[in-house]
Length: 156
Image (cartoon, helix red, strand yellow):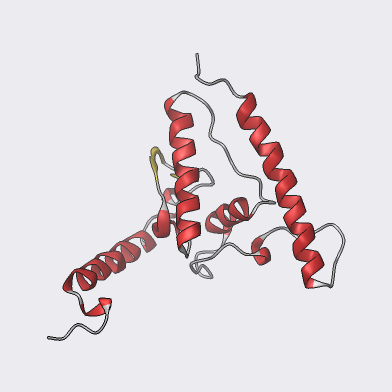
């Protein structure tokens, strides 16, 4: 057999079958078992999820959700409360999308300005709207960073 694509590889085919089976199983999770804003299963806070199993699409988004999971696993391990990213940020909006979207309308999602909160005043120019949403996100992530920096290094 001539291999013309990675899709012809048996390892890829077996891996994709596994991925499809996992996706099918996660659709059966009861609503209360689903993913929370802290990258944890709601009823099992010691279980953190990352990557595409959470419902994100894309390499950057998968890695970013992994950062949220790692941050909160670390915080839990030292007795600190979970950190929830601000909704004004792309990653915070993505987490909110994963948690709040009606399961009947849910589809894998990339980070994008469309899932971020609307600005207080309507702006018609797309570039200006994106610039302002970016400024809002940067200000929110700076505030978020300060809350993380003000937390003790280890819990007592």
